[in-house]
Image (cartoon, rainbow, N blue to C red; front, side, top):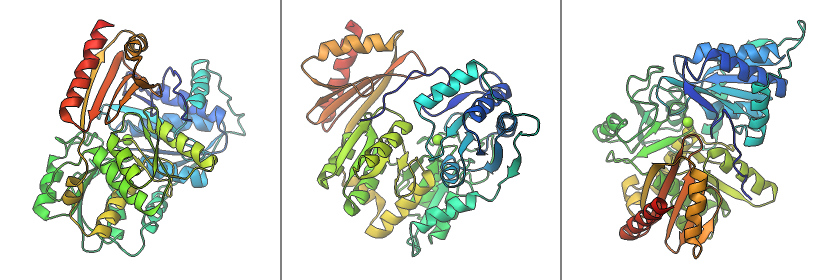
Length: 452
Ligand code: MG
C-alpha cells in the first residue's frame, strides 16, 4: 500500500540539503531550476525561509526556471506549508529554498508538485537524471519566462487556516510562540491572534543568523519559551523549525511535550470527530495506534519520511478509504481537511481548538495518556542493508514488517532497525509499554547486530 523508498543521488527524504558554498551553491540551485523548469512548464512559485544564503540561492534557482521558459512568482519569505498551499491553489509547481531544521550554515531546496505535496521519489529521480545529464530545455529568446513579485500571497494561507476555526475559539487563552527567527514569524502569531488568543513571542523577529536558537526546536533550545510560558501564565507554548512545517508544544508548566504525545493528543481529537485511518511511519510510537483503536480507528504504516505519509494518504483516499490524519511523531502533523502536507501553523491552531474544547490544562490531558518507553540510537555500519538482512535471519520466529528496514512486532513492544538514507548508519528504536522490556529488546538487538 505505502510507496517504496527509491535510491536517489542528490535528494534526501525532504529535498536537497547541504552546507552553503561547498555542497549547496548557486550553481547547484541554477541546475535544479533548469532541471525543474525543463520538466514542469508553466507558473512556478518560489519561496524561502529566513536564511542569509536564501536570496543568492533563490535568484540562481529563479534564473534556471526563467531560462527554461517558466513564469516565476516570487512569494518571498514564508513557511514551506504556506507555499505548498499556494502551489496547490494557483501554480503548476513550486520550490522552497530552505534547510528546515538544519543549522544556519545549511540551505537546500524542496520541490513542490501541483497538488502541494513534496516531489516523490520517482519524479525526483527523473529530475536528478536531467540535472546530472545536463539535459535542459532552454527557451528561445522570445519565449523566456517572466518574473512576478507575489509578496502578499502568504496572507491567503493565514486566512485559510483561521477559517478552519470559526468563532474565535482562542478568546481568553494566552499562547507563547517561538518561530525561532524562522519563516513563521508573521504567520503563526497572526493565525493565533485572529483565533482570539493573546500571543507573546520569543525569537519572533526574522533573522537568518538564528541568534536565539538553532532552527531545530530542541528541548534545550526552547528553554526561553518554556520560561516565558510559566512567567506569563500562558496556556501553552509552541515552537517551530526553520520552515515551520513542524511544531513542538510545551504545556502550561513549561514542560516539553514529547512529539508522539502531541501527535496522540491531536489523533484523539480527530478520532472523536471522525472515524477513519491515521497514516504514520513505522518509527512512530505505539501510543498513536492505542489511541486510534480506543476510538475504533485504524493506523496505516509507511516508510519514514513525510512524503511517504502524504502520498499514502492520497492513495488511500483515492481508493475510497477515509483518511483523517497523518503525522510523524516529530511534530510534523498532516491535517487532510486543510492540505496533504505537514503544517506547523495549522498544528498550533489545532492545539488552541483542542484546549478550548476541553477547557482543561494541557498537562492534565498529557498525564492521562498511556506511558510507553522508547529507546533510540544510531550505529555505524559500512553496509547497512547487508547488516539488516543478516539481522532479519536471526528473527525468523517473529513477525517482521519490511516497510522500512525491519520492524519486529511483539504484543506491546516493537523494534525498528533501518538504514539511514544519507549516511553509513543504522538507526535502532525499541519501544514497550514496560520500561524494562524496552531496554531488554534494545540490548538484544545490539547484541545480535554485533554477531552479524
Ligand atoms: Mg521543516
